[in-house]
Image 1 (cartoon, rainbow, N blue to C red):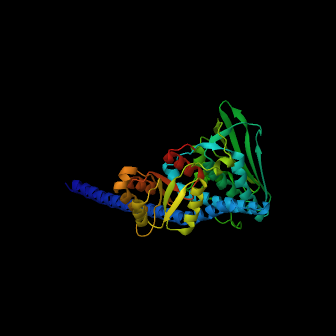
Image 2: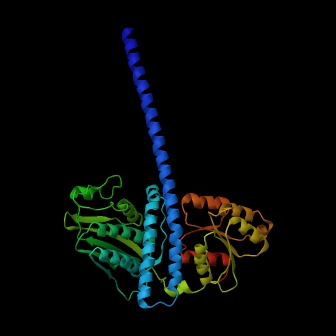
Image 3: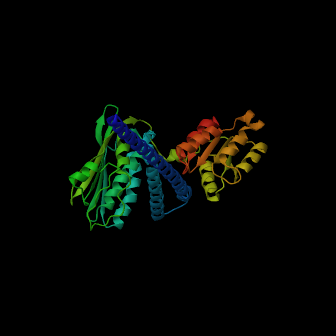
Length: 410
């Protein structure tokens, strides 16, 4: 009997310890989830705060490009524009981290001209390398007589390259950075495009190479070598390449340099992107647009973009004014900022959709916001908003929406 009670006592103690451990783990899990939520909120706020002024900068630079500039001024504006786009893509890369981990990122496949797109990007890095005293070379191995474009996600390709080139410049103190884009391998319905990013930097040890794409591990940079930051998410670049059907690889030797490379199989398309197509207005008949936007600089930007496509714009500075003006004037489309004083875009949309006039006209409502997370898009859908445009506004996406809802031939 005494033996039985001793065993029972031991079991009770074990059970009590187990319950305490479970409670401790549950508490730790709760704290970890709260921390993750705070992180998501912080990233969302940071993204919004950066995107809002950046969209204005890009819009103003686009307007400046339409003026009479000499060759030097055009080059300066181009550097400013692509540096701003570079910053925007860095914001995308940070805020995309969670989407990459969750597998929520979708590819946007369009006809792309890699030489045109990437030449602009490389010029930005050429300037950065020059500031550090590095040689920066890039070349495209391509048949200039080809009659086709490729289908790909230019944004994701550039995000990967931005990441890799940033790290190449950061960890190289002397020598050069060399970029090669090889488009010489043709297959039946496309091309295998290979990207090489070579540097003469500090290189990596074999054990560092094994963990380079693991976000949970930090590389141990030897003392005496001053490098700020550790690169923005090489694991993200690795996963983005994988999402596009490739594999990011590297070869490295300590104190000699590193080469990152990856190949993508891209399909051919006859659709060719030209600057003239972007500038040509697509609205040939009168098309009246109501724009609710509280930021005056953003008003100028969207006015420029819409009028460039042939639209007539009327502006209000909050959702309340949008509702009242909609009741008395006729509009073919409404562009609605989400976060405004007095009444936000969600509430304004709901109020407009409750009017008798809306039941007759069913006016399309487009959300325009620098905050473009899944929660924002989902809330827009719940409010009855038809489409969502992220700031800075992409001209091609804007044109698609105008064509779709104008029901007129472009």
